[in-house]
Length: 134
Image (cartoon, rainbow, N blue to C red; front, side, top):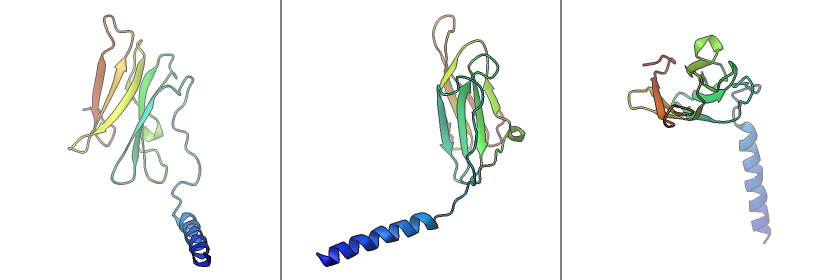
């Protein structure tokens, strides 16, 4: 019984040491999304270099538009001089985005555009790792 207690304490202590020894990349929180009514839909995709792409919808210009930003592993914005990249806008709601990495190191962002005349189509935009529409 003594050995089990000792082993449990040792493993717990080792776990705490590993937890606190892990490198901390970001020093502060990072505000990604701005505007009103921003908490509807968002998605992310991780890249092998530790960066990530975040896609979301918000209403900074009145309509629910789709935006994206790439953030490196240290929390720096990489696209559009730190400003989010506008993926699509319009009088329709742009919602439920997903982001899919492609085999050619690009990304496809797909979403639903509501209030279309006949139905709610699924739309998509391919972008490269620099945030350029293809």
